[in-house]
Image 1: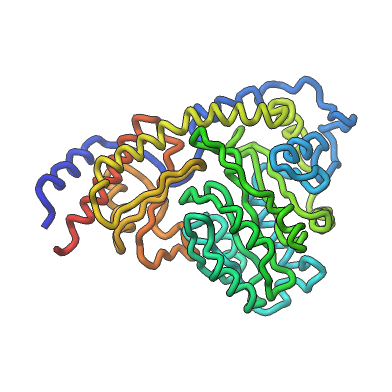
Image 2: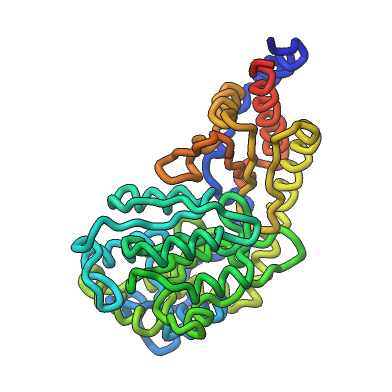
Length: 408
């Protein structure tokens, strides 16, 4: 039976009448305000090479936009395309082109046997949604502190030609905050694959999103692949969605010269050119890597107190409970709260009763299936500091209520 103390705390918290949506890692209004200068009228519409940004053309993006991403990603501009505002759309199109046209001179994936993707877990739900929507089988791979379980990854890709790709968020992974080690990156670049058209979907979404003063660096995956003799293996994705404005940023794709040519051929029938006005205003606002890093430092000062507030409440209310743990990320947008087996769904349901909407249990796993029902993704970014502190307390109270409900 639940203790009266926990019952009373739960009832009192519910009476606060909170209404907080923490289901996605959205930037807070204060973060978006940092880039309001983007909304000001452009001082001219001619690009550096004289291109009229108002007109059609320049399918791979303005040269200065490609150069900006080249500086941020440390990849030659000739190996970068800037197109649209959402890197997720570029990921979707990449897989669609592989299905329809094939990649690396191989037959289209749709004409081969049933295909599969490796999915490090816990991971990003929208990656998994793409595979599920397109009928691609997903295979779970445990995500360790230094990246995916490479013994298992190497075994699987070496022996199964149906495995065509792997999702990777190499830095401050969603939702655990994991950073792939140099050894893991090099093994991914060099491993033997049964499929000659195997692709690493390298989602570098949080490359510049530090939460601590320690600015963790990461190995250049394209260079690692080139040195390993697999120059066409990886396709890197990035965007400014959480740097400037989430709804109107810039998205970029980077890969080998051969893969960029492949991309350009396939997109030539899809579009006559991207939104170059948006590219021009971003380039003029962001300027260069130094200015971007200064902007991201301002983001960090807004975000870090919110993460600290969550961690403080979890330490206070959950710190002595066995089988409960949570990550302490050095960057990114999420905290992964790990409950005892069988408790995540019920905790999320009780949090909802307290006015706190969280991402659905299982979302960090393919098909929404967390076999042990343990992981809860915490997204501290959008609520105010006071709201996020209350929310963390409410989530902790919900979990303690679930633990009190269990048979002793």
